[in-house]
Each structure stands twice: as structure tokens, then as C-alpha cells.
Image (tube, rainbow, N blue to C red; front, side, top):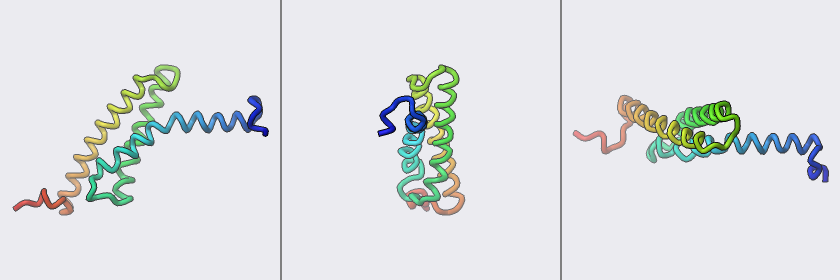
Length: 115
């Protein structure tokens, strides 16, 4: 099998794909886990989830890329700590922004519409 040879171009390409996947996966999974919590269970539409997921994913990727540039290698715990702090802070900000948007549109949850 040609993928068993370490110096083949297919193996180098496959290793590049695996390394890039392992680099971006923590940011993408963190965004995927936070998106339903930020959107709220009553607003679980694909559009709302997408509007919450993509800023979280981009911010996470930027944090990991910054960690790679600053530390010179991937996988430092400081990069992952920064990822968690930035994703959590952005999730709180997005949740507040989404709640204000829903209240002004009149689509607030029933508990918020007290008389």
C-alpha cells in the first residue's frame, strides 16, 4: 500500500490534512458545544445556531493561531486556556446580544413577557 511509505507525496499530504484537522478541531468543537447553549433551547433553528457558531469558531481559530505564532508550536496549554476564556466571554456577550434582539423583536420567551 502506498500510504505506508513515509516519504511518499500521498503520505505527506495525508499528514498535512491530519495535522490541520487536529489544529482546528478544538475550536470548532468548542463552538459547536457552546452554540446551542447560547442560542437557547427555544431558538434552536439552523439560522440562529449558525449566527452563534461562526463567531465562536472564528474567534477560537484566531486564538489557536495566535498561540501557534507566540509559542512557536501547537498544543500549549496556555493556548487552550485562552481558547476557553475567549470562547466563554464571547458566548456570554452573544447571549446578551441575542436576548436583547429577541426582546426588541417581540419574540422573547414567555417568562420575560410578564405583565
